[in-house]
Amino acid sequence: MRQFNILIVGLIRDKKKFQDVLFFLSEMKKKGYLKRLVLSTWEREVKGQQEVINLFQEKSGLEVVSLSEPNIKLPGHLVHQMKALYYGLSVFEEDDYVLKIRLDLSDINEAKIKYLYQLDSYRTTIEQSVPSIFSEKIGIEGGFLFSPFYLNDITFYGKKLDLSKLVNLDLMLDVKYSNLSPEQWFHFSPFIGSSIEKAFDNYFRMQEPLISHEPLLNNERLAKKLKSNYFKNIIRLYFSILNIYYFPITEITNKKANLSLFENSDLIQINRNTGLPYFKDLSLVCESKILGSNDIISLFDKQNNIFELIEYLSTENEGLIKYRETLNDIDQPSFRYFSKVGLNSFSVLNDKPIRAHMLSNSPTELKLQHEINRLRRLLDSTNK
Image 1 (cartoon, rainbow, N blue to C red):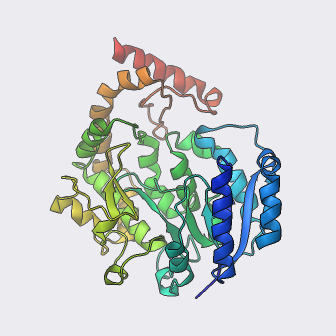
Image 2: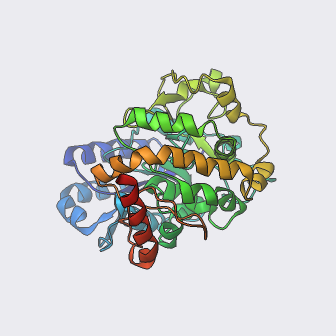
Image 3: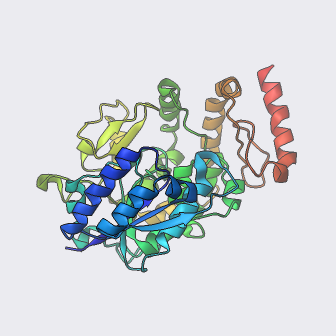
């Protein structure tokens, strides 16, 4: 049994929900499950909810980190999220366990609180033979099965010293990997500078974003990519990393408590927004034809050798070259779609000629103006 702390991050959009969540967490603290309750948000949010905050400061010792908002705005308010998380975590000791939540989106209940309170240490222990990234596993709520590190950034759990590694305000990450989602930015950041980053380097320089509300297009792309041995090995390494460094924050039945994230099929569903397989703590069995393939199921094999995969993916090889050709086949029909919806981004493959996904609206555009101009000429010629 171990007490842990709650870190509430972000906006207070609903006053009643704010009160309800704080009341619930106060009760959990009274029962001895929780140690500290901390709110990290903006000064204007604190001023707008001062009466409620005062009540729970007196009732349950609520601690408040009041911050000025950043002037920089990135997709997904990434800088805002990073700042609130950074200062919120700063009040804890390095070995404190913290559950980070958001008031508007996190699904928090007593079963989940008890599950984390009763968590056995063997569930969070990382084997010694793998690259050293975290001191213990990070608890996550879900993520896309075939988009590496696209993991839920709303709710996660771990030691303060490990969660601090998710904070990354180095905009060079946007220069190198300009199509990273905010979720990937969070969860790939701890691996920057390691052999694991080197293995994913080419992949993230080529990555195209998921398209919301276009399930058929997303699945068409995925089906083509799954024909690539290079992509399959990327997914094998991703699943190995998930099994090594992460565990699911969910109450699993005793019958399945010892199963890994990907052995428990009840945790897999289809994301309605993208139409792609997503793992989450819902009792929905995935009916995807892609996941029904024995060839794809083999990607989940826990016996995959992480070091062999890292070595293979860190080199320029025939599989990588063929995967680039596969992406070219996928991207060509998509140019007009991206132009129509106004999505802007680009991708650079090391020092090789740029291969465009879309136009860039990145904060780094001025620094890469030469490449962007070449990209625009390529798009113009493609759309004619």
